Structures are given as structure tokens and as C-alpha cells.
Image 1 (tube, rainbow, N blue to C red):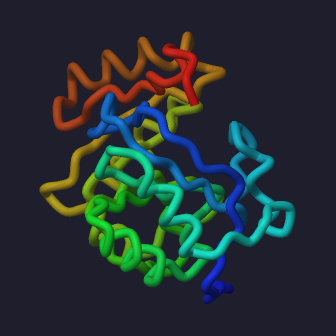
Image 2: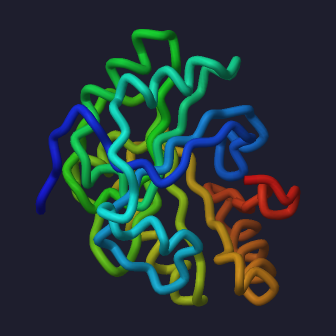
Length: 204
């Protein structure tokens, strides 16, 4: 697996909004969406992020300066697949201005960076690595098909006991999958229902 080490990163977009998903849902956060992804989920809603070369290389100092303008202490690094890039320098720079740094990852690439929160969202198309699984604070499994519920349990057995676990319907199939997820969570209360609330609110 190729991981790029650079003082600049390919940034698809940066924006200030609310975290729409998972344990920190509803909190203000600054998002840094990096370009590049080798996982290739067919239902991905940001396929334009996949080609790292399609996005400008932004110096880490500029990324951090943009984040510093906003009052929230949370910066979410997402993608694409952010762990395709070496993220030690980005995390250190964000921590130096007092930010908490959250990672959203499939776990399919080696872990880099020092994180205050790791959201692991594994995909069937490329398995998550054990070093990422071991530090997951949150497990978010996207449910596209009923069989994904059993697959989710495979990862629930691997993450730390403290890890929060969410089952989230894939947006285009929410009407079909959400009733199944609700019933499953009622029978398996370790899990929580996860929703993409930013889409209901029509915000980034």
C-alpha cells in the first residue's frame, strides 16, 4: 500500500458545519476532505474525491490556518480515504492550535497521525487493518443489504470494548434498510442506529 508523505495534502474541500453522523452528531466541526481513495464503494456519495490528482495540493500550514478561524475545537479529517496520506504533521499542527482531531476512515491503509477520536467505517471491498481496528473509538457500518448486519458483527467482535457501535442505512436505501436496522438494534442493544442527519438538515 502506498502512503504519501508530504507537507501538502490534496484537499477536495474544507468547510465548517455540524457533524451529521455518529457519536458526535450535532456538534459544530470543521471538515477537511482529502482527495484519494482506493476502496471504491459503488454507493459512495463523494466519488469525485477518489482521484487525488484531481484536487489541489494545499500546504498543511494553510489547512490549519483555515481551521483556526472557526470556534469549534473539532476538526474532522475525512475523504476519500485520508489514511492514504501520512497525517502526523497535520495532526501535530492542528493540536498545536488547540484543536481536537477526529478521523473518519475505512481502516484499509496504515494508521498515521495522533487522533482524539477514530471513526472506523470498514468496507467489504478492502478489509480494515488491525492497527486501525485496535484504536477505533467508533464503529460505523453502512448497511446496504440485510447481509451487512451479520458482517457488521465480525468487526464488532474485533474493536475495543469501549468502542461505540452504529448501524447506518446507506442513504439511497434508507427506506428499505432502516426498519431492519431498528429491529436489529432492539434485539442487539450493543448497537445504535446511525443516521446521516446532515442530509435531513440539508447542510454540508
